[in-house]
Length: 460
Image (cartoon, rainbow, N blue to C red; front, side):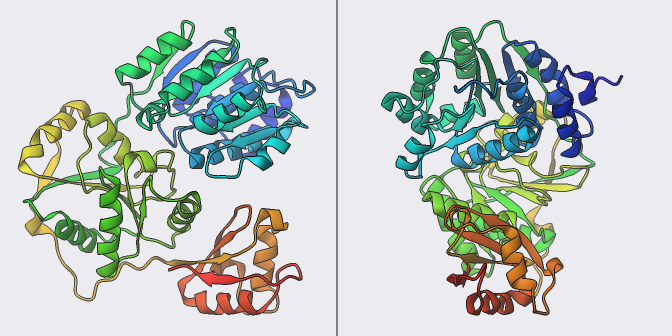
């Protein structure tokens, strides 16, 4: 039996069948190295990036031996952001389909706390959430973790970056001492080792060196002069014409300023940073993921957990502070055997950072002159889709099929013209092809969905 087959693991037949039904054919490297150790109950200290399959790895570990008849919380997953917590919860629910009556709950800030009190009256088996909100519930007594046997710290380095160390340690102090602790981190700063030593028991180390195949990611550096960053960024977009790009800045105020400047230049750019309200963050991420926006301007912290399929390019508007973060940034493109593009802008005084990247990757980088970048006449980088928003969501009993039916029943639109439909509690976002946006807006605005009228608008 192949060691990368899920069937090589001592899992229940129902769980294995569901894993196969979800399309998991072989274990990824992080899964193959970590799951056998996890299933034996060992603590784990693992380096794992977004998109590596780590969520499925610890998800399977949490569901293995979960006792659904026990009315108590048995596993807790701490995440740095609500977006990541939502992604983790969705993946856990998919994996848990084969285990009847599994209760999984997401507890994050940025949403009202009172409804969460009511939901916690029946203890969930697995809780996923952000440290601040989890600690609030623990201090109020609405969440009890005295019977916890598994704890996951997901993207622990970002939780430290975001100032959650005190909350993390406080939460861990409230868990039983005899528990399994799984710590996942994209980078290994000294603080991660210190936390591991403080909260783990002889953890198994799994570290996958993240390197990139030059055949998959074309990586080019451009040396610029002071005051030339935005001009060079626009020239890069003209020259390469990527359909979807994440642009990294080091400070959040830069993200907003750059996005606004690019809008004025005719680019559809959105900013993602820590000052956005949760509703705004959801909207920005939805528009970028559904191809209604071409450019996402983000900080490292804000983009953590971002896993966009078919991301064509990553541009470092600002150089990362260290080589490991640089490699993590560019690793978001060139996935699933597709080619990617990574562009970095640097000034002469930042040359030591370029050298550090060469040493970390154990290969020289390509540095090209900005004079080679070709500007195009009448150039526009228009996203292929437009997002419509409806003031109704899951709590209004709406489903994607209801919205799709409203758009296509008795109209000349067909399902191929409709893209992703994202439902939140009180709002829904629908991606439609740009040429039919006005028609789709009229159909939804003048018609009904499940016999009800909803307000509909087109997002810019």
